[in-house]
Image (cartoon, one colour):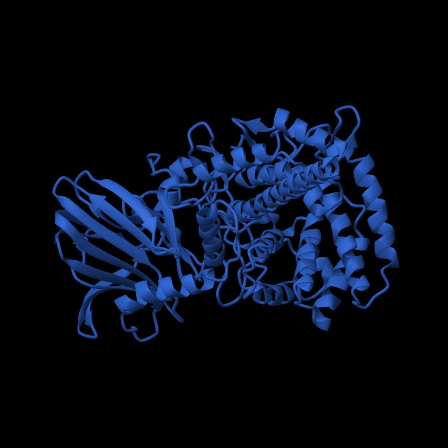
Amino acid sequence: MATPHPQPIDDYAMIGDRSTAALVGRDGSIDWLCLPHFDSHACFAALLGDREHGRWRIGPKHEATTTRRYLADSLVLETTHTTASGTVIVTDAMPTTNDRSDVVRIIEGISGEVELEQELVVRFGYGAIPPWFRRTTVQGEPALVAVAGPDRLVLRGPELPRSDGHRHRSTFTVREGDRLVLDLCWQNSWLPIAESVGEAEVVETTVAESSDWLRKLDYRGPYLEAVQTSVLVLRALTDKETGGILAAPTTSLPEEPGGERNWDYRFTWLRDASLTVDAMLAVNLTEKVGLWRNWLLRAIAGDPEDMRIMYRRDGGRELDERVLEHLPGYGGAAPVRIGNGAACQRQHDVLGQVMLTLGRLRAIGLDDSDESWHMQRALLNELADHWQERDQGLWEMRGEPQYFTHSRAMMWAAFDSGVRATERGCAGDPTQWIAIRDALHEEVLTRGFDEATGSFRQHYATSEVDASLLQLPTIGIIEATDPRFIGTLARIERDLLVHGIPLRYRTTGVDGLAGNEHPFVLCAFWLVTAYAQAGRLDDAEALMDRLVSLRNDVGLLAEEVDPSTGRHWGNFPQAFSHLGLVLAATELATARANTDARRDGDAHTGTQAEQSLESQRS
């Protein structure tokens, strides 16, 4: 098979119903959609192959200028195509429903006339299984029905495409004032076909629902639009039924052209989910954080030794990694993986992040239940049996385990959080936790620090740095103004910056993989935060401005970005990147407000002194 030439990752926009999500290209093609859930198999998988692996495109037949935006306070996508003969708008949305999933596309003629093409290629099983199609009438409407095993898609509306071999196509003209509504509905194949969703429900209700939620956002600072879009993305990646928070809605988008670093991110990492909750807390969106804590209790129930670093959106543990040989990969970047082999890794930092977030929930009044605190005690006691072991680290290294400095600092945070909880009245004897906490603190500040280079190190057996070290002040193990951290910041700037944006680490073989990667967006927001904490506000604001400008036209960010071209790489959109934006924006806003307050206070004190001196002279 010839290597496909896909549109750039950043040419996509996401729509979703908080059970799953679709990626819609600038050309009007839905190239990725898993139904009915984020981690279900895809029925449109052209993103990782070509059109024969499934897509639904509605777009101009002739050359057009295309602009896009999300409707205010929502992820309802509005795409405007302007050709030499006229202008049309296509509005794409996925309304929140039960026992079904709908993609609704509304086509409006704005001026003149535009000839549109429609192509529907359905391939269940990640592009491998063609369904049986039939044309029929459902509730008085013409419909196209596709069935394969347990899955059924029903397309209703005018201008239904007609069979053309293994695909369905149509060409039609939209004139000024025309309005066409197409509804693609998934259900289990044994259920009666449901009624079509109403157009008003799709747009008005979907927008109103997200707008009502967003109204509770409490953020005072620059980058408001970027913060709003980012929290909407995080909300869209939170399963509305289970509370599981996904890392991304995609799998196997490569970290470099043709690369092998292709992973399935359609799962809930404990670390990523905890940081997502932190981002929501930072802007006072606290309404559903209890849902995540309940998910956490269910997911890790059982033997503390069996805690995973990630789970399925429903808390399931079936994440066995395998390769889909029939898919060539995005732009030919193989392999395409589903499942994730890192699920069983030991990553000592995970519990630290979970404990930090649970501590923040306690601070806002969401006290632990007996069950919740019992679970935390059991996990800390289990960590106490293994804290001296090496691990794979935050970045899920597939090389040999190491004593990663960030992991050791996060274990310190885990035990420190446990001790603080007992000081707040939670039951338990923290004596052992205190001893381990203090030992880890001493260890990180000695073995984790490289005297020869004047900076902290990635792990104890190297002098290399790692962008995760930027988190040390946020974790609380050292102040951002400490000379040891200032030296680390200088090393990261020297060794990891590519056109001013940091890599995670230099790929020297520690991760056990071939190839390279682009700068990591989350790490860039960590650098913003570190600059702000260290008092380098001008540098923080300059980098933040640049990162916000690197978002695509509808405000989305992938996992990585090539700063020389602006192209996005890795899974998309990425929760890590968007939660990083929110946390950096709030940190920067707080630092700027504190600096301005001190300046105003100094100015006021100076004025009072001058007035006092003048009075004495009089």
